[in-house]
View 1 (cartoon, rainbow, N blue to C red):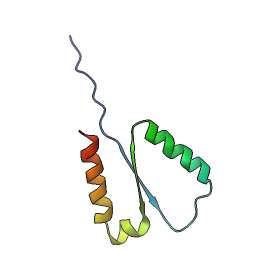
View 2 (view 1 turned 135 degrees about the horizontal axis):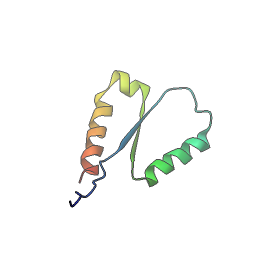
View 3 (view 1 turned 90 degrees about the vertical axis):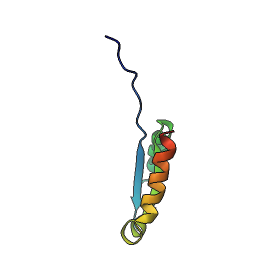
View 4 (view 1 turned 45 degrees about the horizontal axis):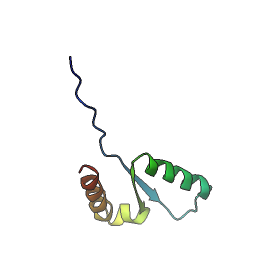
Length: 70
């Protein structure tokens, strides 16, 4: 029986940052680079955007998913 070709679904990683500084900035950059090299789309948002202006999270997230599924 022939197998259907596998299709990679678009992956979106959304990160939410608060006011507290991140403990290991270099490790975060390495992780971000690994995600990007794996083909993931990484968007970063602030806590305030998520809580006070959720459309500032929704709109770019939807746009990124549309672009990734082309």
